[in-house]
Length: 278
Image (cartoon, rainbow, N blue to C red; front, side, top):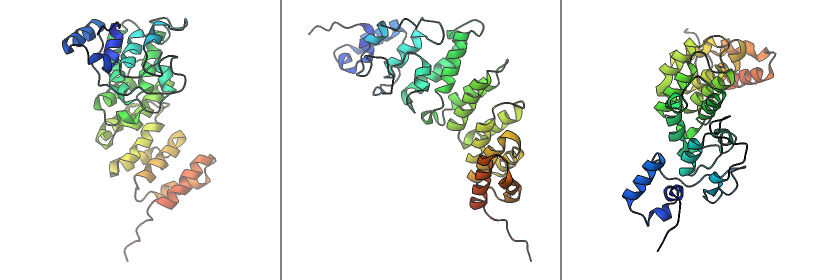
């Protein structure tokens, strides 16, 4: 039997791999510089690259003319690494607006974010900034929950100087709210304390609701004002914080309807104050 396939097909197709020596496959992987990520079934979503729906790879050699390698967020290396694990896409932005969760993509997003400056060296360009925001945005994924490396990287991104654009910071905070667990409380609390006024802290304040401790309660109470008040009320309800009803009650008359709604929910959900001793 003679197989006439390209190297990319070899590493993408388990059926073809069954006819090829394992050592040869490893050599092909090394030649293509493709990480050996676990195999997953291909994902499907709207506006996938034409021809990729059934696991085909020819679409990568027939790109729309608007995609130029190394420009405006298109990087052929990312495209090929993701395709190799069953995640066909032209750009990271396609995925951020596509499937809700991409488990097989998480190791790739993390690896690229960890080494982004090495893989795209030099000063921060428009291209690298788009890649950075795409990697961060794709970590807003429950499949990355508890991934300590991803959490550390997102916190490091929030501490970058000069700061990331506000929109990218917001995505980083949304990702932290999604994937950080109670074990990360000290890290999130430390980050909240560092961020300057005006930072998009609402998702981090909402995260506090995952941690049912007096310290978490006290931090949430500090955010019962300004644009974070709705998130703080939500967090206090989630953690079932005691002795805060009197602090939330004034928000029943807040001019912002969503805040009034959260305050009313808090009055229904939070435990009543303990009666004074006789």
